[in-house]
Length: 271
Image (cartoon, rainbow, N blue to C red; front, side, top):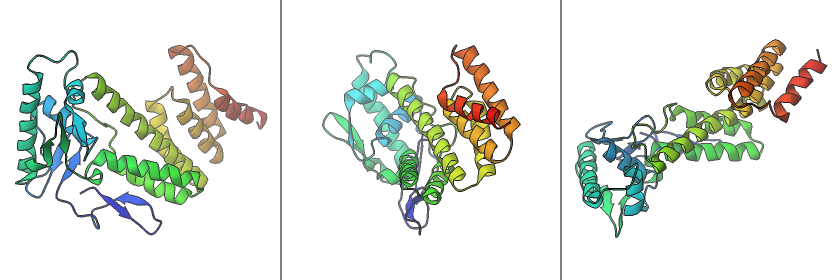
């Protein structure tokens, strides 16, 4: 089960040893609930899965009916939206009870909304987000070792798929994009930590597939160029710049920014 544990470095990492809970809510890679009775119980229907996601992202806090309706319908909700929402909530309660008897009580109707009564550390994406914040803090404090520990743990419970299997509504699409961006940021921060630790080869291995998957993301390309330079692979670094130049020109009609150009020009001047 996912949780927070504080190791010797004081860094919170995903763990099963010290934090014992009965429920885990998985959102990354597709919504599901696990408990003592059953693991990876998937709510029936995309609406119920989206409802679980919307509630779990604000675990322990009430989410208004209006906000939930925005998540559940791509366009204007139907007249029956409130009754439909109650139906989806009922399905989600059945899912919770499948994971363990009595879990349905964790989904609480409060005023004009619902609350999922689980701690943030029971939700995988919130756990990953906390580790990302910890890693960034460590980097700012000059602790690349602590940053690498936290960020490695974050990516370990953060599949590339991210938030999937949701209604393609405005809020659901936006939150999925937000967490995709945060995962890429975690990769960049981890690479920065590895570079600071002198682990150039590890940084290249981490960055190369992500740089290929996101060819217009200049920050990734610059990090990869710098790591290759430290490894002594000038040719590889120049190739990364040329690829970036071609992709930006073809897709966006722009040239690489000042940081990428500075690294490239440094390579040329030291030729």
